Length: 140
Image (cartoon, rainbow, N blue to C red; front, side):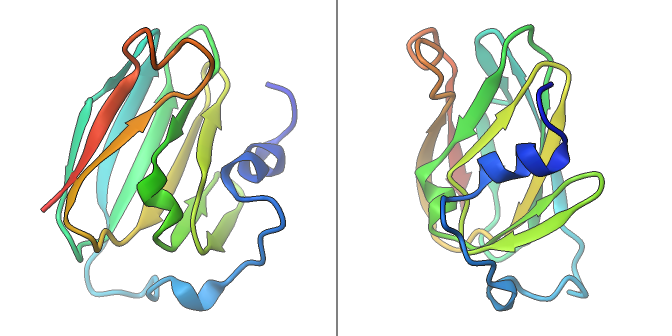
């Protein structure tokens, strides 16, 4: 992989981002985040439907098991405060645009789903969505 954790984290956040720690509910919440592991391969997300509960904290753990770079893009994540958790770094931000992973790497994001509904996500690397690499965030 080119670059270390800081380079990978920079890809997760919008350009010109000002970190806004007050946007994330305190980590000392009574309820630990629910862990959801999402594997990326050629050309699928597993699971393709990610069911979450509104108001319950969640940590999405992305693992690229493929031979190519993959990314996770969900417009929904632009609308909620997120915490990017890396092996050596924690970044809190008002939203995330794309989680991009090189083969064999992983990254995590934490957030509180708030809005109910079904929200599409996909790998937006050219040709990947068209090959079937897409899914749905389902928030109940």
